Image (cartoon, rainbow, N blue to C red; front, side, top):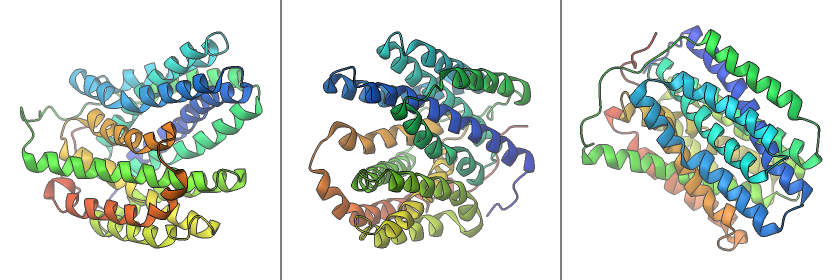
Length: 356
């Protein structure tokens, strides 16, 4: 099991993670400003939220695949940052244009920056956790900014433009290995990727249900966001040291036990959310290991699975009151999927991806 983490790889994941928090804060503020203003009919607001999520999460794998083929991950990252800056300026003029640009920029940034993190991580999960963790904090901050109508646009645009320059100046041009995928993935690889994606979708469904059960308490929602940040940020490091499979399975078993009482006891909900999110960095690293030389695609596929898992909550399908009761069995199902997927040699820390 790989245990050494080059400081440069971790430090770069940290600064990209900080930018990740800014990106998600600005995008959430753009979306929730429309909700706070309530100037549009509710069905239109719902459509705006759905369009944003569909673009931001549904297109990441396509953006990543495009960048993989052209070795342009850094350019995709910077372009995404500057598109979001444009979205912040465009949204007061046209909500639909602002939402569309924010979604496209979000997809570009995540696919590009996520690929750079995966390339530098040399098969580990630590860097993925450091990068993805701050996103939940950014969403929570952006929700507050949007709903309270704070004057955030000028600072947001300045930060995003500066972040783009920062990435251009400090990130060397990096490429994945020149190796290519076989014309067709064999059935075993397809099954592993499907199991990894299925575990992510279930985690998104359960996590959304837990947050939804505490939606009437803003303090609880922000606390749950903090638990998610902590779980993601430490999950990769724990997995690299203790093993991906035992870490993920034990974390999901703990989540199943805690979430059984997560609708009535905030402490149980916080512990369950922390345990649930421990698995995300491992899932990203395992997907990358199963897709050599395709870091953009490897980052985008789990994000697409997140969208699938979040759709029932976003669309209001089903009875929300039943979801918390299903949290424990769903977490067990996710544990079973990861147990199978992480048993493969191609889904363990392996030889490094080529990179500086």
